[in-house]
Image (tube, rainbow, N blue to C red; front, side, top):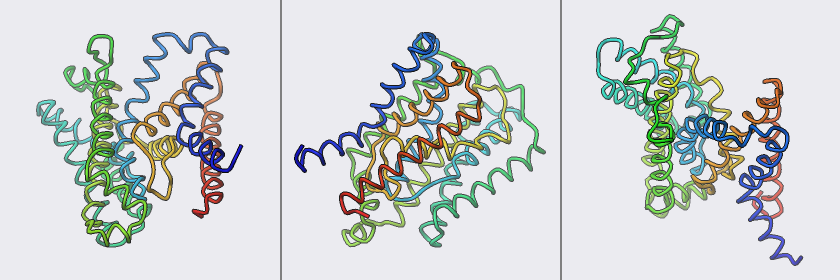
Length: 319
C-alpha cells in the first residue's frame, strides 16, 4: 500500500469510524441477544437517541467552530422547569414550550457573550452557565419535581405519527435543517472557517464574535427543546435533569468524527456517534451488564477515539 493509499484509508476509516463500529455492534449484540434487532428494541434505541441527537445538532455547530458547551444539561433542566411552571399556571402548551425555548436561547446568548466579548474560556463560561441554570432550577422548585403535566403536552414524548414516535419526527426535522445549514449555507462555511483558523477567518471578513454568539444561542435553543421533550416523555420536570448530558453529547460528537480543535465534522456523523453511544447502553442493558460498567465502556471508547485522532493528526503533521 503506497503512501497516498494509506492516507486515503486512514481518512476513510476516520470519517466512517462510527458507522463501522455501529455495524460491528449490531452483529455482536444480535448474536448475543436476538431481542436486540426486534422492532420494539430498535424503536426504543431511536427514541432514546432522539433527545441527545437534538442536543448534538446544536453542539456540533459549536464544536466544529473549535469551542465547547457543557451547559446543555443545565439549560435543558431550567427550560423543562420553566415549561412545567408555565403549564401549571394555566398557560397553553405552545406558549409554555415557546417560553422554555426562549429561556434556553437567552442562556445560550449569555454563554456566547462570555466567550466572545469577555474572552472567557468556553469550558469556564459554560460551566458558569451550568451552575447558574441548575441553581435557579433547584431554587424555584425547592429541589422537588413538578408532576401532573397536561395530557396534550405528554403527547410530544409519548405519542406517535403513524408508527413513528413524535419526538423522532421532531429530531429528524431538526437534523435535516441543521445538516443543510451547516453544509450548504454561508453561515455553515463560516463556522468551518472559524474552526479551521480563526485568524484567517477574521482577515477574510468573518464577524467571529457575532458568529460565536449565534451558535451558542442555537445550542441553547436546541438544548431547551430537548429538555422539554424528555420532560414530556417522563411526565415530570426534574431539577436534576441533564446531569450527564454534556459527557454523552461530547462523546457522541467526537466519536462521530468531529475534531476537538474544530474545523471538521458533520451533522450526520454526530447523529451516528450518538446512535452508537445509545446502542452500547441498550445492548449492555439487554445483556444485564452493570450500569457502572456501561459508563466505563463509554469513557474508554471516547478516550480511544481521541487518542487515535491525535495520532492521525501527528502523522499528518497537524500537531
